[in-house]
Structures are given as C-alpha cells and as structure tokens.
Image (cartoon, rainbow, N blue to C red; front, top):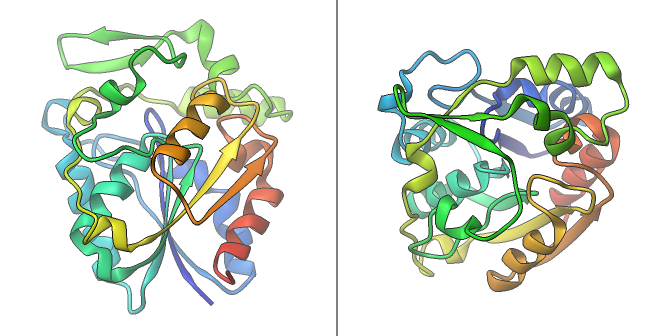
Length: 237
C-alpha cells in the first residue's frame, strides 16, 4: 500500500480531505494531511506566509515518511507540490495534480492565470489577503456539491488567502522536478480553473496520464467515491 500526502488549495484547509482520507485508509493506504501556514486552523499571520513556507512544511512532512509518497495537490496546491518536488524529488513516487495549477519554470500563479476565467476576489491591503466575493463562492467552487449542509459548511470554513504565494514564481529543473512521474486529474464542470485552462496546462507540461472526472472544483466533496477510486488506481499504475 502507498503513503499519500494531500495538499489543499487556496482559501481552504486540510478539512477538504475529511471524506477522502478515511476512504483511502480503508483501502490500506496511509494518508497524511496538513493545514498550510495561514490556512485552516493554522494561525500564521498572512503577512508571513510565502510559497517557500508552504514548501518547507510539506517537504518536512514528506521527509518523515518511511517510504516514497504520492503527493497530491489541489488547485493552488499544484504550485506547492511542483516546488516541493524540486527539493525532495527522491522522496516522491508520483505527483498528482487535482484540478490544479501546473506551472512551468519561472511561472507564478498570478502569471499563469492572467487572462483566464477564475475566482472573483478582493484584495485586503491591510493584511495582504485575497477574499473571494461571497456571492460567487458557491458557483465557483461547489457548484456540483448536492448535499446542502456539506456545501454550506464548506463555504463557511473558507478563510482569506495570503497573497504572497500567488505571486512567487516556481524555480524548477528537469533534473529534479522533471524526474518525477506526473498525473493530472481534470474536472470538466470546474468554474474555478475551467477545463480548457486545465487542459492547456497538462499539455504544456505533459503528464504520463490524464484522468477526466465529471466534477466541480471540489471533487473531494462532490465526487468523493470516484476520486478515491482514481487515487487508489494511481498507486497501482
């Protein structure tokens, strides 16, 4: 069985994996999740949060595992796992991009998404955070989540997102990042990172396998069973 390290995206926290984690564990896998700095229950001040700080936390968790890991990144977490792979490529069996940003060397999230459709947010200049416009959150992130209580509770758990990780470009090489097998799970009903944008990214940076899921930007909530099945199969391929 495999060890999975699951990295959440912007505005969210490790809570997004609450349905996925026990299902993967029931199949015999080990699953490690965390709140990135300044996210979920982590109270790091947003002004101190950087992409490097994210990577440091994820890399340290990976180093604690006895075997190579399958590193999964959702949305903004794609940048995090990309840069992490540059630092601990020898500890990663596979990178899995779940409707995630897949940057090339020198690209930042802001640069990569310029001109693309995506979340609508406002900048809080006082603490340098990005806050999604409340009236857009449901249709942007959770448009296929059928469980009303789950959808509403998830919306309430979203937090302001530190700006700095969006603006820092990744610095990666073919020798390190490029040596790790990449898999992309694309979501066709996604309003946060539309499917055309996802496909451009996984074409520009080719992956060994692309899996298509008829889901929104929260497949861990809307299509939990299908997502778990795909993640389980990743460990066998």
